[in-house]
Image: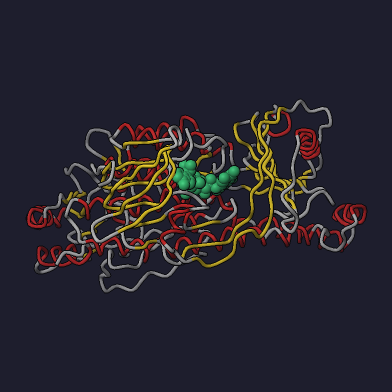
Length: 585
Ligand code: FDA
């Protein structure tokens, strides 16, 4: 007999665990979240918060989304990605990043009701955790996961109360391993991985210093400092990373992974800070120094029986592209509604198999992208002539050659420009962030061919209602001056049908099928004198259906199925599709 029982036990209260708990509680599912520490993230860690993650927060409630913006550094402070010899030294190049170039900004605005921003994990975690606890999650801090055993009906987890030193057990129907990159849950569940850990070594130096005079005229989250001879291993150059504008910072500095991690004392840390800033007198307060390794590892299996893993437990990669906590929160959005449907008896447990089919490819994709982004610094080093020698004097000469008024100088200048511009795949890869199209049994094809990407799929998000894709965002308007995104009409733990005025029949069909299957299916008829009107024609442009057709949207905003026009027997079609997706016999 277990000491405590709950429906879902979540191990970890990082971005993945707290988001899962917040979503489960919002869906009315009993859950408990534990964390071995007495509180949440104590260092800023992940910052970049992309639009897809903001859509999850918006789905949790406008107050959750608004609080994120309240504490975030806004997008206009993120974008002047600088390459320089120090913050006071020469600037080698710059690129507009994170949706701030005019073209990219337009794409961001057309894609989502939300805005990318820079929210340190020290703000994101408390926001998600508070949302979870205030909506019903039972949280236990200073509580460590030790082991689990599962049987046909549930999982029994042994935990250690770190305050009393006593072990106790928790019985749950499902166990979620959101316990980070050294996940014990994943290890005990026997998940299998591809890739490698420990490819490079990095040192993080967290410090306070007012750097406004060096950066406020070129606001950015990242300042890349190239100082010949100053760095080995890691990401290959020094990075000065904004934590809070412009007085809290993080320096990322490489170390040789073939050597033991260095012991960095305050004097060394202060020296590195002053060198990268380029101000030997800089007033610096060192807050913390830590080391981490560059990993390239993704889970090939993300679950075993009643145990599901997510976040860094299934994707371990460097911070390039800012995908860490974003993907973790998006894993949670994928799994939480499925668990809720299964636990409420609205879906068969086979629905949960789609988590593997849908998120394992994403884990692999983002780990591969983040590591490729590190390699793509190579052409910058090459163009600067830093790969031709290890002698700092020679390296400096090679860098200086870019100023020569001759053909070689011109060629070098072009190579530098092109190498920096190519970093768009790390710093403005909107497609990587948004283009996930799921292929699984939780999506029903409609017989139409998948639309191919008209532009580079890593760089540009392409909206489509093709089943499996994230529902396109379009603004619709009420007669009373409100506006809403199509994403606002959907989600919130329900399946939703979007249709037009000639599709009124879907309302009664959805009600009848919903009643029969015990589901609350929302239907929005978009058109004149309806609650929501397509005044700007945005929905008509992106819906890819006729007015009497329907787009059936899952609770996580992904299109479950669509009908281009009203079928002869819409109720039969809807029943068939929902029963298939929800694994109902
Ligand atoms: P996360 O590691 O955040 O959370 C794991 C949770 O599980 C924690 O609450 C932990 O206490 C708990 N836990 C672990 N073992 C447990 C046990 N046995 N029992 C109970 N609880 C247990 N990413 C990025 O994109 N940009 C960046 O700049 C950085 N920087 C960075 C710095 C540092 C120092 C770290 C450690 C990580 C980063 N990251 C990052 C990575 C980013 O923080 C990461 O991708 C997300 O935090 C992943 O979220 P998860 O919730 O999956 O794990």
